[in-house]
Amino acid sequence: MSDFEKTETIRTILLKIAEKGERIRISGIYGNPPIEGKIVFVGNGIVALSTANNENPDSYFIIQYIMKIEII
Image (tube, rainbow, N blue to C red):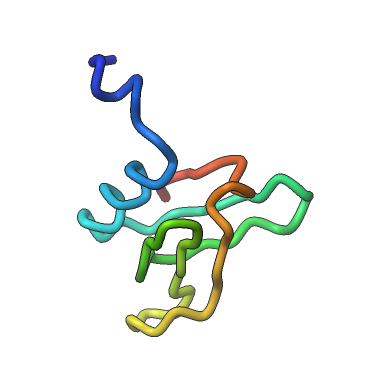
């Protein structure tokens, strides 16, 4: 792992995944069911996902409440 990777934040990781267009599964800290989809938007405190095959967001996560991100 490079020094750059050691200093990554969840937001920068989400931005990189969004640039690649990969589908992800996000799990939250309060036991909500995981949500799968493509990242449509990454803001300062929120990430928007599209669970359908379009670019319209239909699920939103507060970044500080994300516990796990999986690339699927």
